[in-house]
Image 1 (cartoon, rainbow over the protein chains, first blue to last red):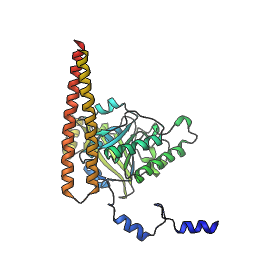
Image 2 (cartoon, rainbow over the protein chains, first blue to last red):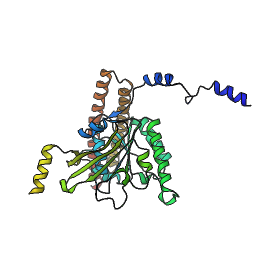
Image 3 (tube, rainbow over the protein chains, first blue to last red):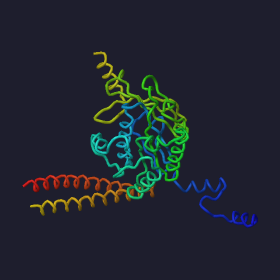
Image 4 (cartoon, chains in turn green, orange):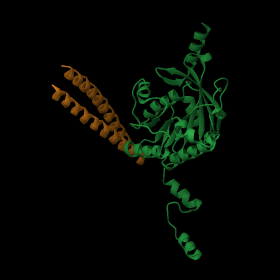
Length: 267
Length: 77
Protein backbone atom coordinates (compact mmCIF):
# COMPACT_ATOMS: atom_id res chain seq x y z
CA UNK A 1 0.00 0.00 0.00
CA UNK A 2 2.73 2.46 1.06
CA UNK A 3 4.92 1.37 -1.82
CA UNK A 4 2.07 1.99 -4.28
CA UNK A 5 1.50 5.49 -2.92
CA UNK A 6 5.19 6.32 -3.17
CA UNK A 7 5.28 5.11 -6.75
CA UNK A 8 2.22 7.22 -7.61
CA UNK A 9 3.84 10.31 -6.10
CA UNK A 10 7.08 9.69 -7.97
CA UNK A 11 5.12 9.83 -11.24
CA UNK A 12 2.88 12.75 -10.19
CA UNK A 13 2.55 15.34 -12.97
CA UNK A 14 -0.24 17.59 -11.64
CA UNK A 15 -0.01 21.39 -11.97
CA UNK A 16 0.75 21.61 -8.23
CA UNK A 17 3.66 19.11 -8.43
CA UNK A 18 6.87 20.00 -6.61
CA UNK A 19 9.49 21.42 -8.97
CA UNK A 20 13.06 22.66 -8.62
CA UNK A 21 13.98 26.34 -8.41
CA UNK A 22 15.53 26.03 -11.90
CA UNK A 23 12.34 24.70 -13.46
CA UNK A 24 10.29 27.32 -11.61
CA UNK A 25 12.57 30.14 -12.80
CA UNK A 26 12.45 28.93 -16.40
CA UNK A 27 8.65 28.68 -16.25
CA UNK A 28 8.42 32.18 -14.75
CA UNK A 29 10.77 33.60 -17.40
CA UNK A 30 8.23 32.61 -20.05
CA UNK A 31 5.56 34.75 -18.38
CA UNK A 32 5.65 38.53 -17.91
CA UNK A 33 6.59 39.50 -14.34
CA UNK A 34 3.15 40.93 -13.78
CA UNK A 35 0.31 40.78 -16.29
CA UNK A 36 -0.96 44.05 -14.95
CA UNK A 37 0.90 47.11 -13.78
CA UNK A 38 -1.12 50.25 -13.33
CA UNK A 39 -0.06 53.65 -12.08
CA UNK A 40 -2.16 55.68 -9.69
CA UNK A 41 -1.36 58.80 -11.76
CA UNK A 42 -0.75 60.54 -8.43
CA UNK A 43 2.93 61.39 -9.00
CA UNK A 44 4.33 61.05 -5.46
CA UNK A 45 2.36 57.88 -4.81
CA UNK A 46 3.73 56.37 -8.02
CA UNK A 47 7.20 57.47 -6.95
CA UNK A 48 6.87 55.61 -3.65
CA UNK A 49 5.16 52.41 -4.81
CA UNK A 50 6.05 52.40 -8.56
CA UNK A 51 2.71 50.87 -9.55
CA UNK A 52 0.03 48.40 -8.52
CA UNK A 53 0.67 44.85 -9.74
CA UNK A 54 -1.16 41.59 -10.19
CA UNK A 55 -1.50 39.58 -6.99
CA UNK A 56 -1.54 42.59 -4.69
CA UNK A 57 -4.12 43.17 -1.96
CA UNK A 58 -4.27 46.83 -0.91
CA UNK A 59 -6.49 48.04 1.93
CA UNK A 60 -7.55 51.69 1.85
CA UNK A 61 -8.53 52.90 5.29
CA UNK A 62 -9.41 56.07 7.14
CA UNK A 63 -12.16 57.47 9.35
CA UNK A 64 -15.72 57.76 8.02
CA UNK A 65 -16.27 60.65 5.55
CA UNK A 66 -12.54 61.20 5.17
CA UNK A 67 -12.20 60.25 1.51
CA UNK A 68 -11.71 56.46 1.27
CA UNK A 69 -14.33 56.03 -1.43
CA UNK A 70 -13.22 59.24 -3.14
CA UNK A 71 -9.63 57.99 -3.31
CA UNK A 72 -10.85 54.65 -4.68
CA UNK A 73 -13.00 56.47 -7.26
CA UNK A 74 -10.03 58.63 -8.26
CA UNK A 75 -7.91 55.51 -8.75
CA UNK A 76 -10.73 53.94 -10.77
CA UNK A 77 -10.80 56.90 -13.17
CA UNK A 78 -7.00 56.96 -13.41
CA UNK A 79 -6.84 53.22 -14.11
CA UNK A 80 -9.43 53.55 -16.85
CA UNK A 81 -7.18 56.13 -18.53
CA UNK A 82 -4.67 53.25 -18.77
CA UNK A 83 -7.30 50.95 -20.32
CA UNK A 84 -7.84 49.04 -17.08
CA UNK A 85 -11.46 49.33 -16.00
CA UNK A 86 -12.36 48.15 -12.51
CA UNK A 87 -14.94 45.85 -11.03
CA UNK A 88 -16.69 47.42 -8.03
CA UNK A 89 -18.58 45.91 -5.12
CA UNK A 90 -20.13 49.03 -3.66
CA UNK A 91 -21.88 47.77 -0.54
CA UNK A 92 -21.48 51.01 1.39
CA UNK A 93 -22.90 53.48 -1.14
CA UNK A 94 -26.01 52.65 -3.23
CA UNK A 95 -25.21 52.22 -6.94
CA UNK A 96 -27.18 55.33 -8.01
CA UNK A 97 -25.28 57.55 -5.57
CA UNK A 98 -21.97 55.84 -6.32
CA UNK A 99 -22.25 56.43 -10.07
CA UNK A 100 -23.48 60.00 -9.65
CA UNK A 101 -20.37 60.82 -7.60
CA UNK A 102 -18.15 60.57 -10.67
CA UNK A 103 -17.82 63.88 -12.51
CA UNK A 104 -17.98 61.90 -15.77
CA UNK A 105 -19.23 58.33 -15.88
CA UNK A 106 -16.22 56.06 -16.45
CA UNK A 107 -16.40 52.45 -17.60
CA UNK A 108 -16.86 50.42 -14.43
CA UNK A 109 -18.30 46.97 -13.99
CA UNK A 110 -20.49 46.08 -11.03
CA UNK A 111 -22.90 43.29 -10.11
CA UNK A 112 -26.51 44.18 -10.91
CA UNK A 113 -27.38 42.95 -7.42
CA UNK A 114 -25.11 42.62 -4.41
CA UNK A 115 -24.88 39.79 -1.93
CA UNK A 116 -23.21 40.44 1.43
CA UNK A 117 -21.27 37.94 3.54
CA UNK A 118 -20.78 35.68 0.53
CA UNK A 119 -17.15 35.16 -0.41
CA UNK A 120 -17.86 32.34 -2.87
CA UNK A 121 -20.34 34.59 -4.65
CA UNK A 122 -17.81 37.45 -4.68
CA UNK A 123 -15.14 35.23 -6.24
CA UNK A 124 -17.63 33.95 -8.83
CA UNK A 125 -18.54 37.54 -9.87
CA UNK A 126 -14.85 38.49 -10.04
CA UNK A 127 -14.24 35.57 -12.40
CA UNK A 128 -17.38 36.38 -14.39
CA UNK A 129 -16.23 39.97 -14.84
CA UNK A 130 -12.77 38.82 -15.92
CA UNK A 131 -14.18 36.35 -18.46
CA UNK A 132 -16.60 38.91 -19.89
CA UNK A 133 -14.70 42.18 -19.67
CA UNK A 134 -11.13 41.23 -18.81
CA UNK A 135 -11.16 43.26 -15.56
CA UNK A 136 -8.08 42.79 -13.43
CA UNK A 137 -8.80 45.44 -10.80
CA UNK A 138 -11.33 44.92 -8.03
CA UNK A 139 -12.61 47.34 -5.41
CA UNK A 140 -14.60 46.12 -2.40
CA UNK A 141 -16.29 48.83 -0.32
CA UNK A 142 -15.98 47.62 2.40
CA UNK A 143 -14.43 44.73 4.35
CA UNK A 144 -17.13 44.39 6.99
CA UNK A 145 -19.73 43.51 4.35
CA UNK A 146 -17.74 40.38 3.61
CA UNK A 147 -17.95 39.05 7.15
CA UNK A 148 -21.07 38.33 9.12
CA UNK A 149 -20.33 40.21 12.33
CA UNK A 150 -23.49 38.94 14.03
CA UNK A 151 -22.53 35.29 13.62
CA UNK A 152 -18.85 35.72 14.28
CA UNK A 153 -17.28 34.09 17.29
CA UNK A 154 -13.84 35.58 16.81
CA UNK A 155 -13.92 38.66 14.56
CA UNK A 156 -10.16 38.87 14.36
CA UNK A 157 -9.73 35.30 13.13
CA UNK A 158 -12.69 35.53 10.75
CA UNK A 159 -11.34 38.71 9.21
CA UNK A 160 -7.96 37.05 8.90
CA UNK A 161 -9.61 34.21 6.96
CA UNK A 162 -11.36 36.71 4.64
CA UNK A 163 -8.11 38.57 4.04
CA UNK A 164 -6.25 35.36 3.17
CA UNK A 165 -9.05 34.34 0.81
CA UNK A 166 -8.92 37.74 -0.93
CA UNK A 167 -5.15 37.53 -1.19
CA UNK A 168 -5.56 34.06 -2.71
CA UNK A 169 -8.09 35.39 -5.23
CA UNK A 170 -5.66 38.18 -6.17
CA UNK A 171 -2.71 35.83 -6.62
CA UNK A 172 -4.46 32.92 -8.33
CA UNK A 173 -6.27 35.13 -10.84
CA UNK A 174 -3.54 37.77 -11.24
CA UNK A 175 -5.68 40.64 -10.04
CA UNK A 176 -5.21 43.76 -7.95
CA UNK A 177 -7.73 43.88 -5.10
CA UNK A 178 -8.43 47.10 -3.22
CA UNK A 179 -10.31 46.70 0.04
CA UNK A 180 -11.82 49.65 1.86
CA UNK A 181 -11.78 49.33 5.65
CA UNK A 182 -13.01 51.48 8.51
CA UNK A 183 -10.83 52.63 11.36
CA UNK A 184 -11.42 52.06 15.05
CA UNK A 185 -14.02 54.45 16.46
CA UNK A 186 -12.48 57.40 18.24
CA UNK A 187 -9.42 57.37 15.99
CA UNK A 188 -10.57 60.34 13.95
CA UNK A 189 -8.18 62.69 15.70
CA UNK A 190 -4.41 62.71 15.41
CA UNK A 191 -2.25 60.77 13.01
CA UNK A 192 -3.58 57.44 11.85
CA UNK A 193 -1.55 54.35 11.25
CA UNK A 194 -2.37 50.88 9.95
CA UNK A 195 -2.91 49.92 13.59
CA UNK A 196 -6.02 52.13 13.52
CA UNK A 197 -7.77 49.72 11.13
CA UNK A 198 -10.85 48.30 12.76
CA UNK A 199 -10.99 44.80 14.24
CA UNK A 200 -7.97 43.00 13.05
CA UNK A 201 -4.24 43.18 12.74
CA UNK A 202 -4.68 40.51 10.05
CA UNK A 203 -5.81 43.26 7.67
CA UNK A 204 -2.34 44.73 7.53
CA UNK A 205 -0.54 41.42 8.00
CA UNK A 206 -2.06 39.90 4.87
CA UNK A 207 -1.73 43.05 2.74
CA UNK A 208 0.96 44.16 0.33
CA UNK A 209 0.55 47.77 1.31
CA UNK A 210 -1.82 49.88 3.39
CA UNK A 211 -3.05 53.30 2.26
CA UNK A 212 -4.57 55.56 4.93
CA UNK A 213 -6.46 58.72 4.11
CA UNK A 214 -7.57 61.51 6.41
CA UNK A 215 -9.05 64.92 5.75
CA UNK A 216 -6.91 67.90 6.73
CA UNK A 217 -9.19 70.91 7.33
CA UNK A 218 -6.19 72.88 8.57
CA UNK A 219 -4.72 72.61 5.07
CA UNK A 220 -7.90 73.63 3.27
CA UNK A 221 -11.54 72.69 2.94
CA UNK A 222 -10.92 70.02 0.31
CA UNK A 223 -7.54 68.83 1.50
CA UNK A 224 -6.65 65.31 2.57
CA UNK A 225 -3.46 63.49 3.46
CA UNK A 226 -2.67 60.06 2.08
CA UNK A 227 -0.17 57.92 3.94
CA UNK A 228 1.52 54.88 2.48
CA UNK A 229 1.88 53.00 5.76
CA UNK A 230 4.12 50.36 4.24
CA UNK A 231 4.74 48.76 0.90
CA UNK A 232 6.29 45.32 0.93
CA UNK A 233 7.62 45.30 -2.66
CA UNK A 234 9.36 48.69 -2.55
CA UNK A 235 10.11 48.69 1.18
CA UNK A 236 8.59 52.15 1.57
CA UNK A 237 7.38 53.12 5.06
CA UNK A 238 5.17 55.95 6.27
CA UNK A 239 5.29 58.21 3.23
CA UNK A 240 2.89 61.11 2.92
CA UNK A 241 1.12 62.54 -0.14
CA UNK A 242 -1.02 65.66 0.16
CA UNK A 243 -4.17 65.61 -1.93
CA UNK A 244 -6.87 68.06 -2.86
CA UNK A 245 -10.34 67.49 -4.29
CA UNK A 246 -10.68 69.18 -7.65
CA UNK A 247 -13.69 68.69 -9.94
CA UNK A 248 -14.97 65.77 -7.91
CA UNK A 249 -11.73 63.78 -7.79
CA UNK A 250 -8.50 63.84 -5.80
CA UNK A 251 -5.21 65.05 -7.18
CA UNK A 252 -1.84 65.75 -5.67
CA UNK A 253 -1.35 69.20 -4.19
CA UNK A 254 1.03 71.18 -6.33
CA UNK A 255 3.16 74.03 -5.02
CA UNK A 256 0.70 76.55 -6.51
CA UNK A 257 -2.30 74.80 -4.88
CA UNK A 258 -0.48 74.85 -1.57
CA UNK A 259 0.30 78.58 -1.80
CA UNK A 260 -3.33 79.29 -2.76
CA UNK A 261 -4.63 77.24 0.17
CA UNK A 262 -2.31 78.96 2.63
CA UNK A 263 -3.47 82.35 1.31
CA UNK A 264 -7.16 81.31 1.71
CA UNK A 265 -6.53 80.18 5.28
CA UNK A 266 -4.54 83.34 6.16
CA UNK A 267 -7.28 85.56 4.65
CA UNK B 1 -50.10 55.02 -29.28
CA UNK B 2 -49.36 52.34 -26.69
CA UNK B 3 -47.84 50.19 -29.44
CA UNK B 4 -45.49 53.02 -30.35
CA UNK B 5 -44.27 53.17 -26.75
CA UNK B 6 -43.74 49.42 -26.92
CA UNK B 7 -41.71 49.91 -30.08
CA UNK B 8 -39.42 52.41 -28.31
CA UNK B 9 -38.90 49.87 -25.54
CA UNK B 10 -37.90 47.32 -28.16
CA UNK B 11 -35.34 49.82 -29.51
CA UNK B 12 -34.03 50.22 -25.97
CA UNK B 13 -33.69 46.46 -25.50
CA UNK B 14 -31.78 46.18 -28.78
CA UNK B 15 -29.48 49.05 -27.87
CA UNK B 16 -28.83 47.55 -24.42
CA UNK B 17 -27.84 44.25 -26.04
CA UNK B 18 -25.44 46.12 -28.34
CA UNK B 19 -23.90 48.01 -25.39
CA UNK B 20 -23.34 44.71 -23.64
CA UNK B 21 -21.62 43.16 -26.68
CA UNK B 22 -19.45 46.24 -27.19
CA UNK B 23 -18.21 45.97 -23.59
CA UNK B 24 -17.41 42.30 -24.12
CA UNK B 25 -15.59 43.15 -27.36
CA UNK B 26 -13.48 45.75 -25.50
CA UNK B 27 -12.66 43.04 -22.95
CA UNK B 28 -11.38 40.83 -25.76
CA UNK B 29 -9.21 43.76 -26.96
CA UNK B 30 -7.75 44.20 -23.46
CA UNK B 31 -6.99 40.49 -23.43
CA UNK B 32 -5.17 40.83 -26.77
CA UNK B 33 -3.02 43.71 -25.47
CA UNK B 34 -2.10 41.56 -22.49
CA UNK B 35 -1.37 38.46 -24.56
CA UNK B 36 1.04 40.29 -26.86
CA UNK B 37 2.81 42.73 -24.53
CA UNK B 38 5.66 43.42 -26.96
CA UNK B 39 3.53 44.01 -30.06
CA UNK B 40 2.92 47.70 -30.48
CA UNK B 41 0.75 47.29 -33.59
CA UNK B 42 -1.69 45.02 -31.78
CA UNK B 43 -1.71 47.40 -28.83
CA UNK B 44 -2.47 50.43 -31.01
CA UNK B 45 -5.22 48.64 -32.95
CA UNK B 46 -6.80 47.23 -29.80
CA UNK B 47 -6.73 50.62 -28.10
CA UNK B 48 -8.28 52.16 -31.20
CA UNK B 49 -11.14 49.65 -31.12
CA UNK B 50 -11.65 50.21 -27.38
CA UNK B 51 -11.94 53.97 -28.01
CA UNK B 52 -14.28 53.34 -30.93
CA UNK B 53 -16.46 51.06 -28.80
CA UNK B 54 -16.45 53.65 -26.01
CA UNK B 55 -17.77 56.31 -28.40
CA UNK B 56 -20.41 53.91 -29.76
CA UNK B 57 -21.52 53.07 -26.20
CA UNK B 58 -21.88 56.77 -25.36
CA UNK B 59 -24.00 57.30 -28.48
CA UNK B 60 -26.20 54.31 -27.64
CA UNK B 61 -26.68 55.55 -24.06
CA UNK B 62 -27.79 58.89 -25.56
CA UNK B 63 -30.20 57.07 -27.89
CA UNK B 64 -31.70 55.06 -25.03
CA UNK B 65 -32.23 58.23 -22.99
CA UNK B 66 -33.95 59.79 -26.01
CA UNK B 67 -36.10 56.69 -26.57
CA UNK B 68 -37.14 56.66 -22.92
CA UNK B 69 -38.15 60.31 -23.06
CA UNK B 70 -40.09 59.74 -26.27
CA UNK B 71 -41.80 56.60 -24.92
CA UNK B 72 -42.90 58.55 -21.83
CA UNK B 73 -44.23 61.40 -23.98
CA UNK B 74 -46.09 58.96 -26.26
CA UNK B 75 -47.64 57.24 -23.24
CA UNK B 76 -48.75 60.63 -21.95
CA UNK B 77 -50.65 61.45 -25.12
